[in-house]
Structures are given as structure tokens and as C-alpha cells.
Image 1: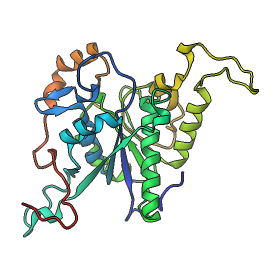
Image 2: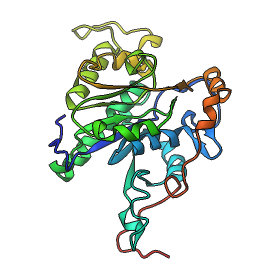
Image 3: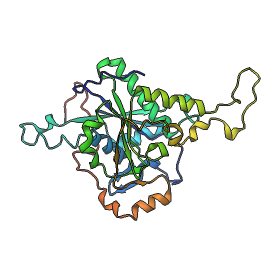
Image 4: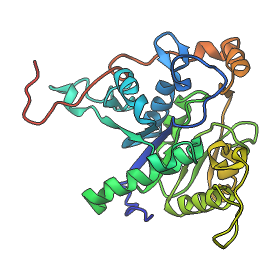
Length: 298
């Protein structure tokens, strides 16, 4: 995977939101990423707004195919950049100066289903899909960096506003809480490029198992059923432990909550930080679609 031109005037930061992964312990009729954080505001909304505040030009949600209709019904096809929302208030046509961030839905490939479809692989597969689709259109729209945003980590998003220029640059950007990052398996945002992608994918493939015992030959023994396709259960730190921190811009968060299990979800709801999470303005985040080509608005 190659990177784009990294020209600051045409920098493409692609946001990747992993949804496809092993189920958590909520055992509810809807997907785990649709847990409410505030009235009318879900965990998937929070991940999308994180990409918007970070300055992503595109957002790629990686989910299973059967989840796409429900997510699209709830999210729509684009979200408005909250930073650009008020810049055109004094223009004759304010809607034309607002920046739309398109949202694309990426289904997990059938060959990866129930084999290596963990959250880590969803991040890598989303970045790979964004790269190949962009490259087929033009080399000038190939993503320069990728920003991973997780639905199961809650923290204040406005802190990203003051670091947008650093996020949209060739220098890596990593969020931290109490000196803990995605390296330790926390759902904290970070950026990576094509070389990082290759290293993460190599680590995943190296540690993953298949059907047979690793080795050569046609008469290899088969692994026990519970040990086959181990990559589908890989935690974040298993794949992203090689994140480079030395030359990265590391930002310490004032607070952070994991909501990947029932107890931690209840801890967040009982915390004082819960009141800091609210649904954004309706014009920023609500169901919206792009107008079809040659179709008039009713």
C-alpha cells in the first residue's frame, strides 16, 4: 500500500470506524455499536463525530453486510464538518460553503468472515478498501494517512479541534490516557500510514492460525476446533503493539471510558463525564443523503 502525495494543500485523511468484530457481552437485539451515550446519540455517532472533529475528508465504516441497512438508516450518507459549519453564516448561500464529509459502508470480505474479522482487522481492511477505491479513481485522491476511530471508547472530542493540523500531516498522532494508548488495547484514536499498515498486517498474519498446524507439507495435522482461526479473537494490543510512539504527537486526554462490556458501560453512565456527552446540532449529525445525479429535490 502506497501513500498519497502528502501535499498539505491536498492532504487526504481517511477515517476508519471498525464495527465488524466479535460480539461483546451486551447480548441485545441490536449491534453493540448502537449503545446509547445520550438521548438520540449512539456510540457509532460518537465515532463518526470523532472523525469529523479530527478533520477527516472521508469516513469508512467497516461492518457486516446485514448491518449496513440499519446503520445507513441511522447515520446517512454524510456528516457536516463541525468546524466549517459556522463559517458561511454571512454568505448568501451558507449551505454551499459548508463542508460535507461522505460516509462509505464497507462490508467484510466473505473469506474473512468468522476467520479474522476482529476489530483490528476491520481497521486494516477499511484502510485497504479506502486505498484501492481511491487509487482506481485517481492517484491524487489516495489517502495520505488513516485515522482509526473506535465506537467503544468515550472521551471529549473537542480536544481534537486544536490539533487538526497535526492530525492531517505525515507525523503520526496518538491519543493517550494515563500513558495508555492503543498499544495497551484501549479504544483511543490514532493515525497510521501505508508502511504502518503493512507492519500491522504482517503481525496479524504471523500470529494467526488457520485450520492446520503451522508448517510445511501436505499431511499436516488439523488444529482443535477452538484453536482454529485465532485472529477473529485478537484484541487491539495484539495487532497494534508495534505503533511507533517515539516520533508521534501524543495527546493526553482529561478523561476516558471504555464501554466494551456491561460493567464499564454502567461505570460511564454513573460518571460525572456522562453529562459532557450530548447529541450534536441537528444540521451536523442527522440522516442526510446526497442528491442523485439528474434528480431534482422535491
